[in-house]
Length: 418
Picture 1: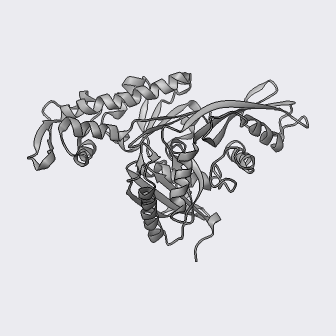
Picture 2: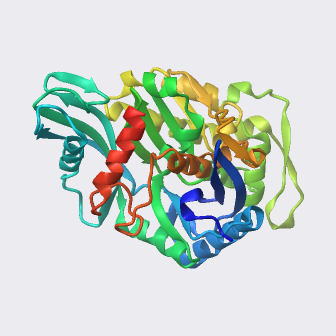
Picture 3: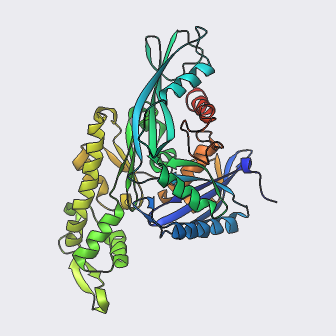
């Protein structure tokens, strides 16, 4: 007999190169990982679905692995969303407190008012994240409920995406008999598994370097204050290697993983690599420094654009904890050094936080940060940070459904009160 939906959480990470999924179930002590799966992705480009049939097949393949391993039926799942069409901005709302003391209904009203912002046609809000509140003259309030006052103001961070891109993900999942409970920005999910609470408080940038895009979430004072997507990732390095070394793309990817270095100063002059040639020609021996010369400009471009995004938003002074990198390319030698050199801030490679004893089951299957996004969505659902959206087919925490404020209220209680 299948477990009740309320006892299970499934996170599907749709990536340009890989699709990964995690299935977990509630236990008296916390959460158990019972199923894990991954398969090559063939229907996405730069985080966006470009081939429906291929993506449907990929989702079916990864869920087949999860079901086989976990012994559970899957008909609902949380799924990530990325792509250059994802955009975030800050806005605010203000209401009069009705009974001279802030109550939950006042918080609901001010969050609803903050969402009454014009967005371009064809776009949809899927995250509305409270940043801070103000009660009368008291700024920087995290928990306003119970405070005396007559004026309540909320600053929120709103994340939107192209409705067509969101609908394509829902369509692909539904063709496998799976309803998307909610869509989650990739960098937010990765933050849940790779960032320490003190980093979120002091201010930190989470950059998830995927194959096609680099997704950014900026945290300060425990809240998300900025999100962005850079249309560059590990695949751009692979393509440059394939062209520069005249080797098939598959071999270029292997060379990048095995021998890549993003900082030429770390490479010894006499280091060499064997490079398979195209068209069945004999392999050639090339210097590893040449490989680094190909990779470094693209890695530098990624870090430069991260810095530009932060400066453009005026948040440079709020990220004293620096940058945390996740994603495949983040583990390449030299990425930390190059990032620190360009940004002038500390950089570390993210790793999954120690979540014992709350997290059990087959945790060995999700030890590395390649599962950060899929696992992050599962944890966010378990912790009450995200909820199933029953109003609009899984659209998210935006105003398009009648229950959005109820979900925001529950999120608020979880994030600021518990």
